[in-house]
Image (cartoon, rainbow, N blue to C red; front, side):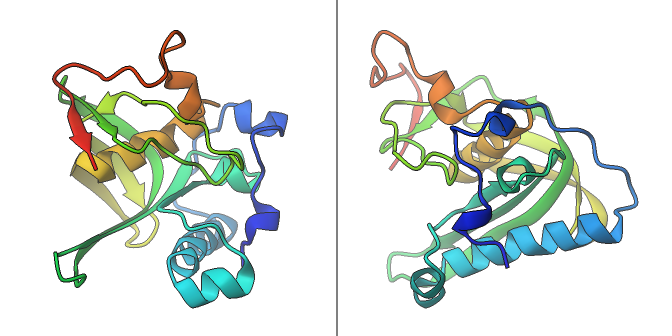
Length: 189
């Protein structure tokens, strides 16, 4: 099982390296990596397991964060209604994902982004696309998928895909004023 000990932080130079395309069909090793990354996200969102294994909760994890320079990331974004009941879950292990379309409308998280590879939170606004269309191979279903993602899920996917190119969320901050609001943006609470 992947734990925080397996996740490299932003002081490790590997986090800035470029990840390589993954060969399809997936090797047994890559299938295991996909399984392990999703297993981490599931456990990290379970309060008991997160406490037991000392896991920081996450909604996304890129292969480079566990020291593997491959264009693969796990996404696990649950949505809840006002009563706290889960209404849906966006769940994929995306292999070689590509953004094939996006809306020019910007979006950002009101409370900023976080990252399992950034142990000390950096505060600032990260501009992202409010809606994206992604084509990828999903290691969970072993099928090619075309995903239209909006809002929070779109931001999560863009955050993980940045890792493939050695980019961390705080690289997007406005250098003069990291908390400067973005006009006409979708602000996600």
